[in-house]
Image 1: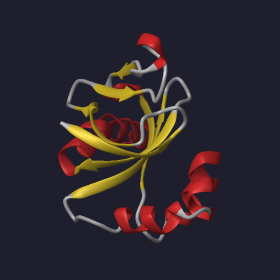
Image 2: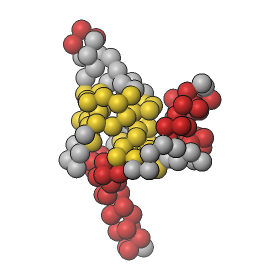
Image 3: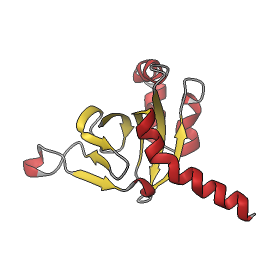
Length: 135
């Protein structure tokens, strides 16, 4: 199932079939590169490669760029895309907008179905529970 990338360094922006999130795979398509610089190459991750995932809503949208330290998201907030992204973030109830940080340092902002978001964040919730239980 595809998802929409709203912002991310070097990633193809928008909803594309190449952006996939399943229970076992997260696939992100680079904007350029690959064959003759026309078709972007893919980055493949396991859901356990997600080290941070913060749900972003319309109220927290402005602070997300500063919190995660993303120049690109900060530019989107300040620029003309800010209003459009705010409308997307405040959209469908069955969709979740997540600010994701991966284990290789790559960060992006994406709109996922509720099931996709759950698949990507389940291990983080389990890890947080284990840390609280051991403290």
